[in-house]
Amino acid sequence: MDPLLRDLYQEVILDHGKHPRNLRHPEGANREGKGYNPLCGDQVTIYLVCDAAGKIADVAFEGRGCAISMASASMMTEVLRGKTEAEARRLFDDFHRLCTEEDFSLEAAAASDQDALERLQVLAGVREFPVRVKCATLAWHAMTSALDGGGPATTE
Image 1 (cartoon, one colour):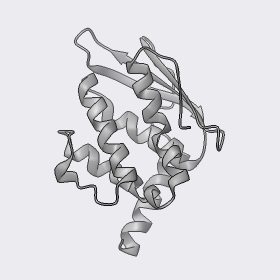
Image 2: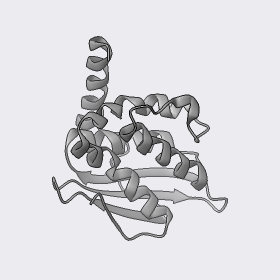
Image 3: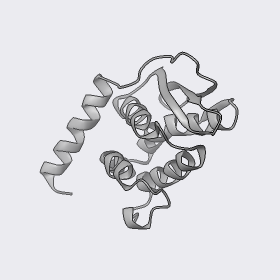
Image 4: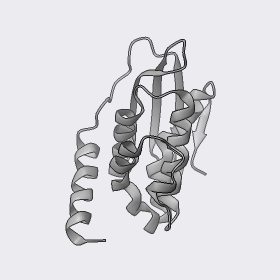
């Protein structure tokens, strides 16, 4: 990866890690999922406000953890708003592949929101550090837990 691009990606991750977006408990949250990474102690609770049609009207989180964990949760909340549950699940599947598969291509993604995947690409560098994949995907696992009706999600 180009060193300038790597530096830019690191700046984005640090900005989201230090100044997370949507760090709150939204009023009217009707779905909740908790995530815990026992390897490093990261904890996150994802709150969703889903409307009657199954669209995510609002999404936010509370928690604590490393910069990657907090940045991923922050970025996730930005890209999920307005998505259907099915779109959110496809985006998670593609994000997980982005973080784990060396040959993952945005063109072959199942999610229809290429812009969202491009924004999330800053976290793709975690694939070089398998332990950090768990940090990057924790909030996403908690989000799918919220969609499934709650319950704890871990990265074990």
